[in-house]
Image (cartoon, rainbow, N blue to C red; front, top):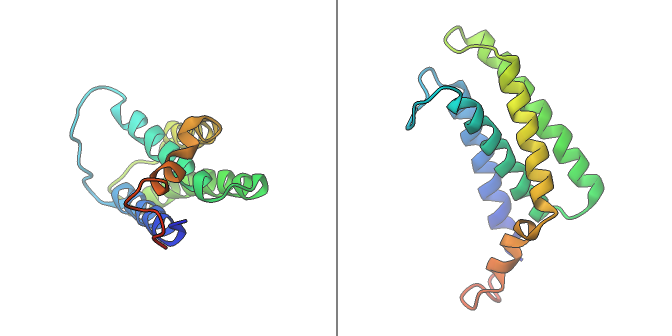
Length: 127
């Protein structure tokens, strides 16, 4: 398993979420009402789905769930301290729903994407 690669990629995505969430003017590629809530949901769903593929143990997945929910709440408080971003309960809700969505997706075929990638001929035997 390419565990180290998958973990490093996941931690980079966590760092990116922190950076984008705390930067003064985050990029807004698409503009329609509520798009930021969709971005929150998708970011946290992706993180949860990604790490659920690395950690298969149910107890660890519960810890991941709690950790990502706490992360989403904590970032909102950090945003309120910066003076240039807004604290929003709805963002916390979108983050939490994203974590729940990612956990649900991990129980489907999407929860086996990394395993399937490892079975590709070019990646077999790579550690």
